[in-house]
Image (cartoon, rainbow over all chains, first blue to last red; front, side, top):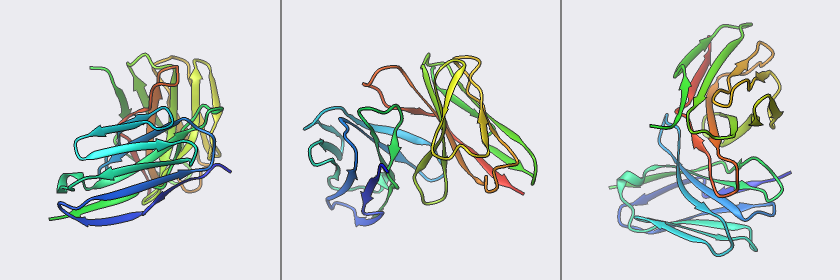
Length: 111
Length: 113
């Protein structure tokens, strides 16, 4: 059974601090996606990572992919309240045609 | 503007009733997907379609049905066989090829009354 595990599941951090969310997966894949979901809303695409060593940055968020370790990270730098949301990673297996989502990390940034 | 439209935003279903959730996209995407999200959980795939008039079951297809008569449309019917349908339903689409992620609709929140 294909598994996509995120940790932590819940994260409360102070403004200005740094932290990393981890996404481990159990299948062979070169394709990893990060999404953001605000309460009661749909998912918004953040990053598309398509190869080993891929690194993407947007504002205070940076995502990376290590396909050999089957690990992706989402690093938050100098957190601000607007980053409070739930973050999901999703994996598309190399031989598959659907995405598999992690359980999400609920991030709360405290002023 | 291109996008995916889901309707209705909120839907209430009585016991034993079938209901249909609408999903329409004008992105010219080939593949479309239905996911279910329960509170505090990730997304689980119900059905997906990569081409008109063809679709495949996902991990939790029991109690649901779909059709794909047009490229733009992928409606989901929640049947009375689905015993616990209360959830947030998300429709997504994706172009052909491996370089693209999903584009999601705004979701339909279904509640059994």
